[in-house]
Image 1 (cartoon, rainbow, N blue to C red):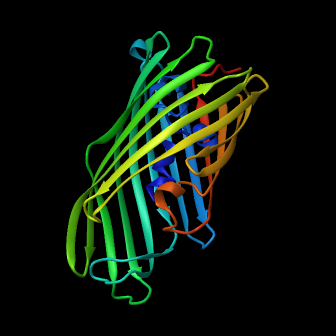
Image 2 (cartoon, one colour; image 1 turned 90 degrees about the horizontal axis):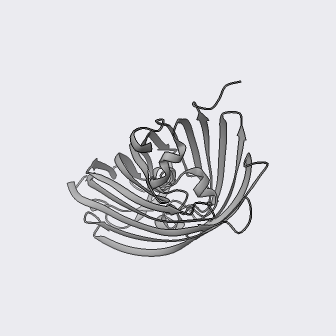
Image 3 (spheres, rainbow, N blue to C red; image 1 turned 120 degrees about the vertical axis):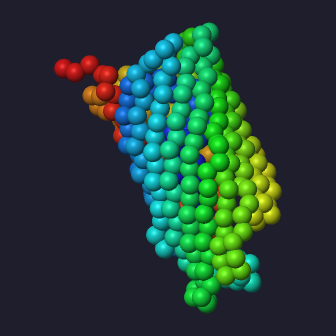
Amino acid sequence: MREFASGQIKKGVRSIGFGGDGATWGNYALVWKDAGTLLADGGDTGFSNGNNFHFWATGATTPLLWHDLAIYVIALKQDSNDIHFMTTSPAWGQRQPAIGQGANQAIFTKMAMPLGGGLSAGILLSHEVSQFSTQSTVNSTRATQYQTDWRPSGGWGLAWEKPDSSLLVGFRALLNRDRERRIDASGSAEGSAQANEYRIGASYSPWEGALMDLGHTRLQRQNTLSGTNTTFEAPNLGFEQSFNDNRMALRFGLDESSPGAGFTAKFAAFKLDVAYIHNMARERVGDLFGVNSQSLIMTLNFNYQAPRY
């Protein structure tokens, strides 16, 4: 379920709208460009079978500090409605229909600064825990609870931008570590859940206001509780065109196998980013929660350092 919330806002809504390339405009290294801002996030993912996940988040970025360092902190809360899906557990036996509810809470801190010569660097520190309770619809006495305990997690990013802003290239690494616990009638079991995500990408401006983005994602995941170990790679493609002195922008793209689109509108000290994604995170969650989904994510950003008239 994290793929429908925290897995997205780490990139930012603008990036989500044109391919989700976390190595370029969603890179941790560029946080200093958003210095002096406050934001509120909201998102909803609805499946055609009625399953629904939603989240809210609020964050703030400091003004530029020592050597133009900026620090960004965001807190997130995610939950769901009654989720209908197929699953199993050691005490259940065979895979069977079930109903469940999940929740997720997280705090992320990003720190970034320009290093000179167009190069920027940034890091991410994360604290995230999740809970999911499920019950068989075949036999109501069969119930399972999943919980995650935090382990040190985070990431880092590097980005280089040409002086005329016509080219941006970057790399981003995200290393997540959790301790997962499963509790059912057979007892309690624990194991580690690890995910290593690496992104590389480039963004080029062929004409004024336009951006063409190309990236690549590699994700390695291992879960000792379920005994799974998977790796997949996928592209990130996107295009953006801004208008009216960058007060408006339209974009579209392909994030792995999920097409999306979005827009930005600026008014006074406010900026609104909206992104729509079809079958978000399909490569990561498959059809576990449903075959088709529609996601809408929005961010309202306020520049508290903007001039007041």
